[in-house]
Image (spheres, rainbow over the protein chains, first blue to last red):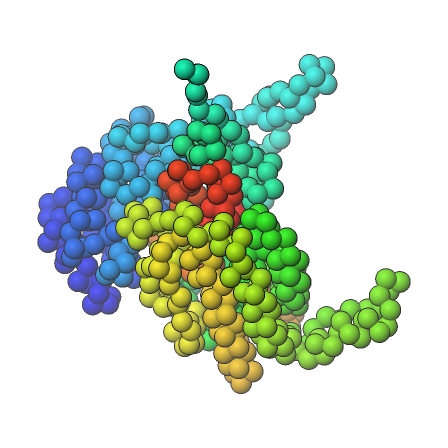
Length: 200
Length: 417
């Protein structure tokens, strides 16, 4: 790994200390994991400490881990943010798992980066992750009056309802979907060394 | 005293200046915008969810349909993310072809942007001019991929095929006589590279025509100068990237700062604005077009001299040639496995970003080792820019909202995904 990422990891360990639950260096990217309780504080340090200097929140998204791999043991929902430091020209990925799978809540980072506003609304809309402290947590991408959180793994790709014009009632109505779910290429997981793409 | 109340106006979703399906709820005090609340999602197709049910290669054409005016740049980010996770190298010629087509795409995007932006603000002629030039670049797309817009030309591991030796020709029909067709075909006699070189030689002249029409135009300046000013601090807070960030005076370009493809081997400058208003963003994008033109020229020179493979020869990722497939059992099996089961990407996660014409376009993948992504997240530049709409339009007149939408370079394919 390059010296630059090494330096970033050292700065992270120095400034975050115990609050750093996990630090991984893979594929030329640094990822850290923090506990939900420390999340807002860690993010503030990441922005304000000049040795880290992450002045931009590039992306924030929700992830539903319930179907990951053979059997997923950890918490179900995570919020993953990508940070960028323009001054230091490096990036960081921060992952925080919500404590409660039934009602996932993590702190909002809108007071730290204004750009988090819509990203958090999107993660709420698609995954149902509630961002504590967000002032305007409305749905953003789905239709007005949509029910459910469509990007969760238990939400079918075809959805639950479809819309059509009903000539008898003379208006557009919702009804349960009539299409059958169809999978042309099945999802296959092989052993990790299968094909050995990187070295073949 | 008369009862004064704020006026709420619904702008769109079917408004020609909304650049697609944007519903903007404007709270007005007279003609002054008090609050702008963009309602998006009317074009939401759940591309990210669809990608979870498609193999890694099957999602490439979906990328074209995100930002449908800069198709190949979207594909580039996608392929880069897959390549990063697989740990495979793209042949150098493939990298140069990608660089060249990224810049062709940048000009395509900026031409559409300046045409529509000027049209919204009141300069009708621009759209006619820019669509004339776009036609040539679309032909380059068509020559290389068979499609004018939705190319699906970049693939994980390289590009689908090498550049063609001859350009498609116009044919005589009942609408075009022989003389017209001859004039149309004049710059299509050679290869695609000859055709593009001819374009790069003509383009600076067109470009100066745009400058003559707009840059010192009194109406254009009255409509753009000091409209939608964003300070550098706010630009960083709001997650701006690309021309929006550079317009505010921050020198940041991924092609320079975190080079990918062949950008570290070509020479170009990064224009930076001063005031952070719509006019500066206009000037930045205009200069970017000239820089792209020069990058295309450098790539043409290199590609002329250096033949070679354009896609990796790792047949776990890229299909073998048709010829090899028909004479060799192993290649046949590779082809069959690749097109029925697809690529297997090792477990892990990766984020790859490109300097898209609109800003930083990134793809974030989580893989659990299957032949399909576990989660894909598209980081669309326009999403962050449109989120700043409220802040940028506050205190401006309602007509300025149109200017601000135009200077943000909004396309709904990528914002709604």
